[in-house]
Amino acid sequence: MYIVPSKVNWFVALCLLSLSGSLAAEGLPPLTHGLTALTTPFQAPALRLQDMDEEIVDINDMKGKIVIVNFWATWCPPCRREMASLERLYLSAADKNIVVLAVNVGEDIDTVFSFLGTVEPSPTFPIIMDKTSDSLKDWKVRGLPTTYVVDASGMVRYRAVGGREFDHPDLVKNITALHGEK
Image (cartoon, rainbow, N blue to C red; front, side, top):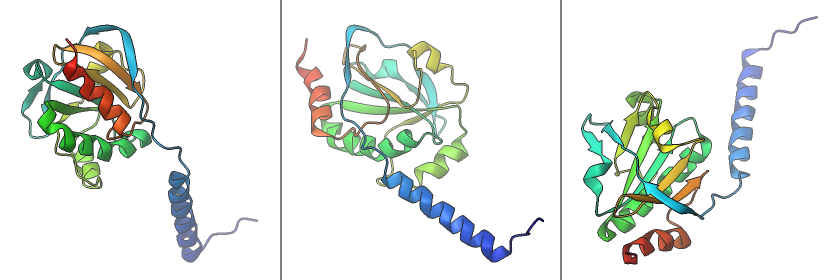
């Protein structure tokens, strides 16, 4: 015997599914705040892509600054969770010559724009679009999110695989310490 569910039952089921999804998000582990120092820093690979306004953003134009390069996608839960902390880092560190570049991987502008409208605070740092995902190979990205910290001379000094709370004091301290190194 097959029972056809009523419209009310479907509505109740959808509400319960939605509620269980939000409860599961509350049960997620906290974002971490550590960075992995690279034992052998390497020259940052090329990264020259269009931003959401179709302007070219080139990491080579950022020499002399510390650059946080974050590879992400809207479908990636930890990527979504860390986006607001990247904005808070960007806002708090702008006077420290630190910039954030968020490289969206494989998505279109409409998808990214729609997601950014849900982030609070909304990102004001450059979001650059790698629609073909070619930069993943050059940067040796194996999973999302992956973030690299590039020092003022263009050397990659830190890596973080997985979600981070980028405005955590310990993480900010590691990044800003790069200014004092020669």
